[in-house]
Length: 200
Image 1 (cartoon, one colour):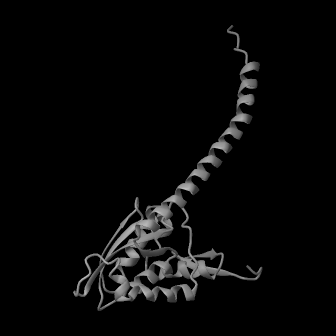
Image 2 (cartoon, helix red, strand yellow):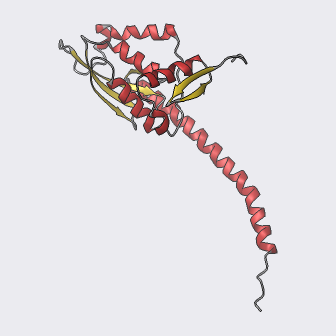
Image 3 (spheres, helix red, strand yellow):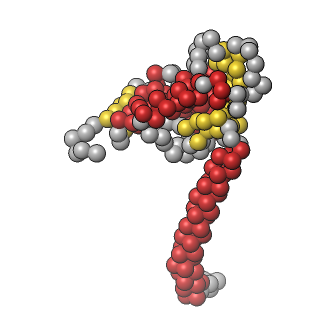
């Protein structure tokens, strides 16, 4: 970022610095929706998502009835639609809370359930009041990614997350071994030179 660039958002009365316009836009969307409590609840940082206009425009393809027939739950002629979405970037319970509250606040949304363990969201909405692309855009606005549930994509996502978790475990293990290499000689030296205080 340019040295002179300054991006900030007022959260709970305090000005918070942001690293770029993307983070600023996401934080402002969270604050404007009245969900700044998210910042007090989160225990891990989300992965983040790029808000690239061409990518957001591409979400309109999910409004195609022929495509929706592949992933809508029991598609019918009724105005109420239901879909299972995969959410990417969920790292803690605060992420789950934020997504659930933000989606439930969208016009036309009737019900939202987000499952932390499977990172899936079940959404029911009135198609006369909103479109699926708008719901996907609402998720992108707060820095997460969502797309209709696909078993193959889910398996690929889980595999990527397992690889990341394995690398973190290995790094943590190696770091612990390094700490032990320094700690053990210090403990041994301290105990080798220790002598009990004679009683008088």
